[in-house]
Every structure is written in structure tokens, then in C-alpha cells.
Amino acid sequence: MGMDQHEGVARRPDMSKNKDPNPIEYENTIYQKGLRYERPPFTFKALDWERLAEERMSAESKGYVVGSAGTGETARKNREAFGRWSIVPRRLVKTDGFPDLSVEVLGKRQPFPIACAPVGVQRIFNPDGEMATAAAAARERVPYIMSTASSTSIEDVARANGDGERWYQLYWPPNERNDVTKSILSRAEKAGFSALFVTLDTYILGWRPSDMDNGYNPFLRSDQIGVAVGLTDPVFRSHFKSKHGCEIEDDMGAAVAEWTRTVFPAMSHSWEDIKFLQENWKGPIVLKGIQSVEDAKKAVEVGVQGIVVSNHGGRQTDGGNSSLGVLPRIVDAVGDKLEVFFDSGIRCGADIAKALALGAKMCILGRPYIYGLVLGGEEGTSHVLKSMLGDLELTLHLAGIASSSQKHLNRSVLVKEDDLF
Image (cartoon, rainbow, N blue to C red; front, side, top):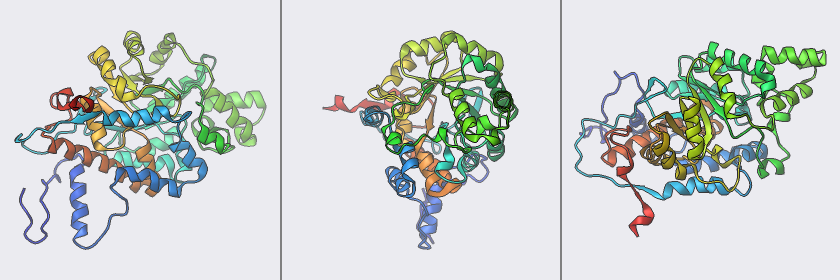
């Protein structure tokens, strides 16, 4: 690369004519501003985001997002698993440009192989909550997965997301409330959500010591946080009025409690129940929370379009296996039959690269972008997304990997660190 004679900064390719954001250009703008002695408002040290966010959060919000189930064993395994794989760089690999990060997923091309995870109750982290993160995701061309536990309605999140790619995550009411489920799905489709992500591992909240130490369950408070989807749903509102003889606003405590029982019914659905979703959702269906080859094969049998290899970031069950550890086995079993997404434990670009190399089609980021939301609302969220993507792109480029597709980024570029000794 040439050097600007006046500024002494390495030139990056001009991407102004490309409609997709250029993650590496973010690095260049920071260095350019540094020539005028300007410092960025947010750190680029990915592992510092959590610590800095903790300093700004209340005990309740910190416990909710940072805390994990039980002793945190599953969460620790998620993180430690990434260190067991290493990227082997290749040298003197001539390329025409920087790595192509685009991916074809769920029938559409996406410029980047990441999406924002369905994180609920976002207004406890920043007053702008889901409105800020949905807007940031659209700005950075990253798919946004809206949680049923959002503190903003389906319609308002869609407005904030604008022309962005958005998918809806379902906390699934029991079969006795199928009319409520149909209403939610209908609203999401009308609001432009193109895929349905069904969370399978959270029909009741797990054993979460941090939340219990604070006596804090956001879904039991008499406000909109975590329950906005239900309190704005016409079918649920009609049910409530018939049962209680008043509007939701007249008895928020009862309404919140009833909605929470509706979306966290304490008992799981069955594989046979997937048919109901298929009959009432036109787009792709992705099952989130798969941790075994057996369940992955069942997902193929019932005819869904994708799965998320996920253990909820270690927030639901303690003592479980790492998501990254089981990912290759699941990909080998079903990767040619449906699309495999991955989450749990990702903190940097190299983590994304490793999960993609092990066969994930796309990675879903959770805690990191929430830390960005805490630190700076929409701008903080954008910063985290751009940073993760810039880190990923340079990681691949400096390892001689031409793209994030399986053609170039696969297990051949990895080695088990233990095998080196």
C-alpha cells in the first residue's frame, strides 16, 4: 500500500462507490483524526467493553447481562473453547483486495456474516434501548433479531430498523394460547420481519444467582420493559379485558404477570408443535438453542430452514458443554441440509473467524453490542459492530484468507492448540 506523503497514513482502497459499509475504513478514519490529536469516544479493546459498561450500569442491569447460570461454568467453557483452536496464517498469498465478508443466508445476500442477537429488556441498559440498536444494525447492514422480551413494540422496532434486514425471535406461548402466537407472528410479518427464530431453551428463566441476589426479574415489574410486545398485542389485550374486566393500563401488575406466564410457560413444546409455526409463518424458521447432534437431526426431520448452535451464552443452564465445542459435530451431521448459525462466547473478530471456519454460516453477537449500547446508545452499538467486523476482516487478510466463505475459511486454516505440544 502507498503512503500519503502529507499525512503518513497507509492508504486504504476507496470504497465510496460500494453500497456496503467498509469495516477497515473505520480504522483509517480513527488514524486520520489522530493526526489532529483527536481520540475516539469508545475503546477498541474488545475485552474492556464489559468492564467499562459495568461501571455505568445499575446492579440490576449489570447482573442481568453479565451474569450467567449457576456458577458460570457453561459461560466460562464458551470463552475457553475459542482458545483451544488457533488460526494458522499462510504467507505470500496474493489477493486482489481485502477479504469478501458477504454471505448468502436464508435466501438473501448479507454483506457480513454476523447478526445482532435477540437480547431483551434493552431499556434497562440505555433509555433508547431497542430503538438505538435496531437503528445501528440497519446503519451497519447487520441483520437485527428482535426479542419477544423487548421493551419496545414490534412496530416501533421495525420503524427504527427502517430498510434493514430484521428477523423476529419468538418466546413461544403454550398451545392453549395459539391465538396469541398467531397474532405475534402476523404482526412481525406485517412489520417486515423476514425470518422467525424460535428460542427453545428458555420456557422458564434459568437459575441466575446474579439476578436473585438483586431480587430482580425485569419481567415482573409494572412497566413496559421486557413485556412491550404483549402489552401492545390486540389478542392478548382482548383476553385480558375479558378476564379482568378492565384495560391493561388499569392493572399493570396483573397484566405484566399474565404476559410473563404466557411467554415463559414453564413447560416445553414438542417437536410436533413446529408444524403450527410452519402453518402460520411464511418465511424461514430457525430453531435457537441446539446443543446436540440428535436435536440437529430432528430439526432437519421437521423441515425447518436453520438452527442456532447456542446455549444462551451460558445464561440458562450451568454445567453444559461449550457451544463452539459441539459446533463441528453438528455441522458434520446436518450442515448440508440446513443453515447452521452460531452464538455463545464471541468477543472479537478472531472468535467469529474460528466459528465460521468450524462450519457456522453466520455468527450471532449478544453481549458485546449491548455493552456498546450501555456506553453510547446507537453510536456505541455501531462502534462495536464496526469494530468486530474490522477486526474480522483484518484477521482474515493477515492470515492470507480471501473470504469468510467455506471455500477459503474452513477447518484447514485451524489447528488444535493442544496438538502443537
